[in-house]
Image (tube, rainbow, N blue to C red; front, side, top):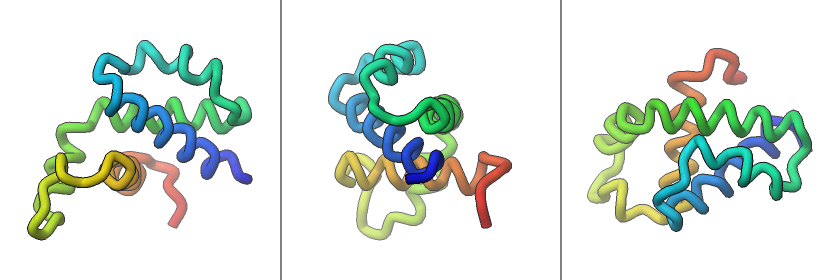
Amino acid sequence: MGKRRDGREAAIQFLFNRDINKELGPDDFDAFFSICIAQAGAKKFAKELLSGMLDNLEEIDKKLEPELENFELPRLSTIDRNVLRLATYEMFYLDDAPP
């Protein structure tokens, strides 16, 4: 698969792990990616996505909450919540997002 797709998949895996183990943060990227099977380019892209998303998490959640009808962000499944957060980060904050 492509670098971006694999990078997104690795980022979602880290975020799922982070939701279970609340202490995980950017300092834990190296430990996580040492066991991740993605290629080097995908890992680099995943790290960029994660650091940017985590830096802007509060703003991203504020953008998402009004769009969830009859739902609150914490009620979403871990995967759904993190896919939405990552996609929102790519659309609003990443300069090289494809059209």
